[in-house]
Image 1 (cartoon, rainbow, N blue to C red):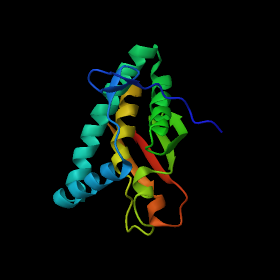
Image 2 (cartoon, rainbow, N blue to C red):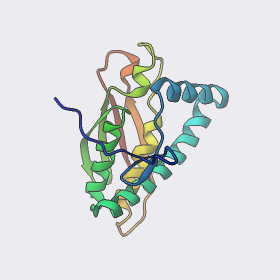
Image 3 (cartoon, rainbow, N blue to C red):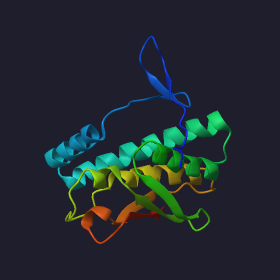
Image 4 (tube, rainbow, N blue to C red):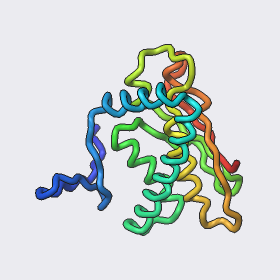
Length: 175
């Protein structure tokens, strides 16, 4: 099977990588994960999780808004495009198992998570919590057009790093 094509433009004068007009950074997976673990250790899990949730949700909303404008996509198509692009960029393979904007809830599965692949098996707790903010932000973007703005929440309810599971699972919805 051929790898999905992701457009990457590199500015020869600045070295800046762009995909769909957005500046990107290309780095080794272990670099990202080692930094992630170091910050978690320094701040503690819950403090770091809260910071990540807010920062990654904000980034997901910004990305979705930019991609919706760039490609002329409707909100749900943008949500799906977001997880397709994350899958193409090495974060893992996301699949949307349920997406119900009317009931304001959904479920996503993740295989080959960057955080699982860089961790020995048998983790004591879920390790892919960084993606919770990705999902709450993208879902908040999807719900922006609704009559009543809503806060969203997400929890990793199953993690492949804990053993016994072949993938991670997340549930998200209105808070």
